[in-house]
Image 1 (tube, rainbow, N blue to C red):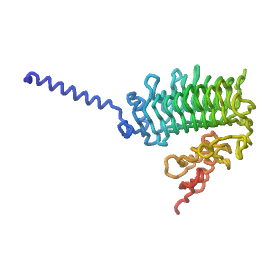
Image 2: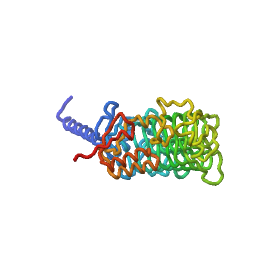
Image 3: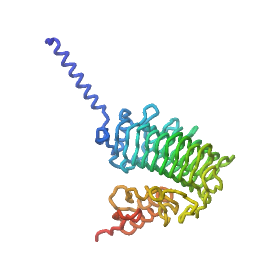
Image 4: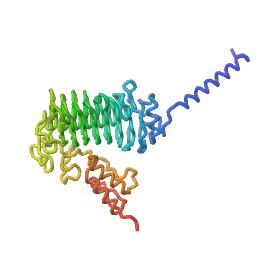
Length: 422
């Protein structure tokens, strides 16, 4: 029953409710746009948006999309997702890049741009460049631990596991999920289970991937995956330098799973002291298999492998020997590098040539400046892009800066010189 005496109480209660709504709205995460649904994902277009994401754990099951490149300018970052609260949402990079971030957590596990990508979580179409990531265990450039899906992503930079220093990879430290059409370049360092792309695979699959890294560890060291257990690695290749003392291989250091249609042209060295189980493709196999997979005996410096077949550089580069790459799918998966411009004569994955050609400069103004030409040259030297890209970029800069695009031609010749207006 309403009385005059109850009126002040009702007014005060209304004010309290109103204040609560205001506080709730003030505390809600604010992104550049979107509502976090699959049809209307949250929009990430700045470092501030990214910080909002990693600071709002209740959004780690939502949907996100990048609307532009994000430069962290060497800022210290916090991983998104932990073992207790995993990131199980989705993030579509739309071909954009996040770069120049640092994560320094030497006492922590599950360290990466995403600390723990849980089952059902997905990251796609995202580049991570020039990162410097340090953790203790399960450390990766993209994800410390992946139980979800990583598709069409890449990482460049330095990834390090310190202390006990185990389970570290250029893209993911530990993988229980699926990784496809991904690659990593850079310097990967740890003690045990150190891989160019992935440190350790208990289960899951890695396919259509490659790595070209400087990989250094003590034991269980691989150019692509350090250790493959009940898992599959298919249609992948590895390059770069791999150094370790035991269980060291150009593709994987230790294999209990399946390696199918893969090759390695990584240079392999023993770090010193007692060397055990050093192989051109696989260091040690136990109940696993390496089917139609090869390693370059000249480049690797290794004449033996516990799995796979050794071939010379001449046999592995175009024109390929008849007993090399047997039954490989050169119609839809692999392509022959006939002129040596894309992968120094070795086969490359078709995704590399058939994907949307990236302009020489990522701001899409179709203009190449000297710094970008130099960056492509440095990228070739570091293994992150073919020499043809570097040559073409330098040519376009020297002869006119602006360029056009012909979709009927493959990269890098699809970039056509457009002389400046006179």
